[in-house]
Every structure is written in structure tokens, then in C-alpha cells.
Length: 358
Image (cartoon, rainbow, N blue to C red; front, side):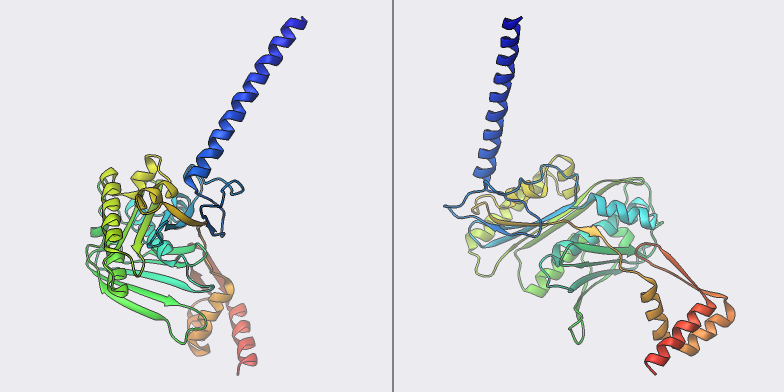
């Protein structure tokens, strides 16, 4: 009996040794790759620093996250995103068909990637105005990972083989950057190049930043009412980048696209935003610093915003509407929430506003 107990203890001890060995190997892997992961915290490494106290990088795409990585040579910035959950939220809230989900998902992904790094309360808006049956796509994001958007007609669907370019059609991309302190928003407009979203955004960035060294990719993999994967990336060279760095960036993008041109397919194959960034920064010094944020579909609608819009119409116009209706109904395009206000409440709100601001 004592001998059997000693054998069992020996087995447990060997298992413990194996677990410690695995833990040590994992820690060595994190140190050698120098990839920190902590929300809203930027981490920089030098030859003397250690990643021992840094939380581990997500090893899956279960949770949406956006990373921003600077190359080791300091000349290239990469931003990568996995966004399956927030695109699924948009699909559910707006009851979208696959074509509309794909188009809106791409637009929100590109907006999130471009808005990352904006200052507090600043927003970036992309409006894809085309002559296609989707009747336009709108996406708005802030610098903290909040995003919202909608499609003019989310019920459009062509069945298998949906083509986003046909859904959006020919037209223009309007970009608006705004902040409460701005006297007026900054805006720009360019002609849609191929209406596939990513290429159009890349074209706008090249025109506005006077740079050819920018690559943008986004994609959504959706089946019926299920978003299987969604994500994208942006790689851009910083001012002063060498010609050698620019050529290496082009080579890295080509290698990644050989695996698959659609980022959602790369994510389906098991890649993560961090592993995509590693490929894009190959032979550029690896990842020198990395920050992470958690994006989400966030709508800012409220009854107060509805009344604010009514005040802009003016009392006479609102009263004219109430003569034909017993209540005023408003629906949010972003989350489909319906607001209903009885005639008495609307009149009281307007009269109170006039008393305060005659």
C-alpha cells in the first residue's frame, strides 16, 4: 500500500515537472517574440527590457481587438483588427442581408483602422455614396474603438456570389473629420475607384497624405445571418522611411496576399491581428511597440437627441406635424431603436426649450 502511494506521488511529481517545463517554454516564447498585449497601454522594448511582466497576447479571434504596431526600425506603422462580434451586432440590430453586412462591415473596419489614434471626442466618418442598390453606406468611429454605421437598404441581396462593388455602385467617398472644438468639420471627397471599400479608402489616404506607401485591406465572411470572421489591416510607411523599407513593405504585403487577399479568410485560417502584423513587419525589425484597444458597435442615440433634432425644425413645423399625427415617431438608423413621443410631451418639451432659450 505504501509502495503504491509512493508510485502515485512520483507520477504527480513528474507531471508537475512537465507543466513547469511547458510554462518555462511559453515564457521564453513570449520573451523572444517581444509582443506585449494590454488594453490602452503602449509598451516599448529595448535590448535591456523584458516582457516578463506583460500580459500575454490573445491567441485567438474570439474577442474583437485592434492592435497598432510600430516596426523595429521605426519607419513603418501597422494596424490590424479582428471585428467579428461588432459586425454581428450590426447585422442583428439592423436585420441585414449578407451583401449589406459585407459592405457595412468593410466600411466600419476601415473607419476603425483610420480613426485609431484620433484625439479625445474626435470622430471620423466615411460615406460611400454610390448608385448601387444598397443606397449608400455610412460608418463613423472615434479614436477609442467605438463605431457605428448603417446601410441605406439592408435588405438587398444577390444570393451566392454577392459583389460589394455592384451593391455600392459608382459614386463618391466622402470623408468627414470632426471635433466639438472645430469651427467646422474637415471634409474631403474622392471618386470611388472600384467600390470594394478598401481600395477606395487606400486611394483617399494616398491622395490626402500624398503618399504611395499605403496598403489597406478589409473583409467580412458571412453566411446567412452568421458572421464567421471579419477584419482588416493598414500598413503605411512613416515620413523619412528609406527606399529599402518601402520595397520591403511591398514585398511583405505581397507575401500576405499570396496566402489570401481577404483578411477574413486569413483570420479563418487561424491568423490573429498580431500574427498578421508580424508578417507585415518581416525584416523591418519586428514589432518594437504595440498597443491594443477593444472595438465595439456603440450607438449614441437618445430621446434627448431626438428632441434636439425637433428643436432644429422649429415650433411651427413641429406643430404642423402634430396636427396630422397624435404622436411623433423617430427611428435610429444605426440601431433601429424606435422612439415615440405623444403630442402633449412634445409640446411641453418645446415650450420648456423656448422659455429657457427665447
